[in-house]
Image (tube, rainbow, N blue to C red; front, side):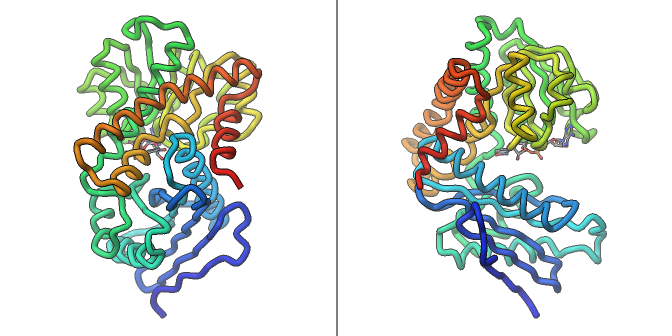
Length: 348
Ligand code: NAD
């Protein structure tokens, strides 16, 4: 029967929800376009195994909403979207999906949207997959961009603001714990080490641990990292890591990391407020890659645009500081303040 891409008639909190299937190649994907009010919707493609189809749809919607708010908070003329590409729990070659064909089919769908949606990397989607997409559509994050590096720059900018709020004048006297030492986390760790910071880190993958250990990171287990004693915890693996129970066991003064949607719910956000832990909202500090993506897609990659990208990412330090200070004044979670500001900037 080939590729079938259907629009879900009632899409609730998102402008558009598409479900794409092609049984011959094993494609099953959900594309959620949250908002195009400020401009075309930008958002990566996450390849992941979900407990159910509903969980995949819920993740696509939540991540797409986060992208719209992230773009608005960063002042970009862009909206947010997200694709999740479902990886079956038992995808053993040669019977599993033909991933190259899946990405090319997704490229055809993105092309058919005519620039309304611009896709890019996310967990499970890196340079080879982006090349497959580029063979079918031009609406892809440019190959000359480095999403991991840009995101790390934003996290480091946010962390400077957190240090300021905590009254840290000399970062070299601090300890930072990085959970997840991949494209973003390892860069964050390396940069902090270069500033003399003591960096602890954890990753589930032995190769990631080895690279970090070689750089000077003190390795602990993934079970230990969330509870190690440190000044700032930097969640750079998956989202949904902060619930009431985890928050109770934290031994840090601040949190600043790239993982999207770190808080499981409102209760976790309030538990952080009650414990006086300064949380730099991920919807602010993880905007580096989308800033680079939006500005280079919309304006090209000249030296002047590159400078603009750099400055816009550095500006996240100020946004973080404003959000955290407003939250402190009003006695509420910084994430609430950030999403409220994002909603106001999206309008509607
Ligand atoms: P990545 O896949 O390169 O790295 C993530 C690392 O986390 C991997 O090394 C993985 O082994 C590790 N990991 C997974 N589960 C873990 C666990 N339970 N404990 C410890 N380590 C674990 O991904 P990335 O590009 O570095 O992105 C990190 C996070 O930041 C993701 O949540 C991503 O959605 C978010 N983010 C990334 C970007 C970007 O541009 N790369 C942009 C915005 C947000």
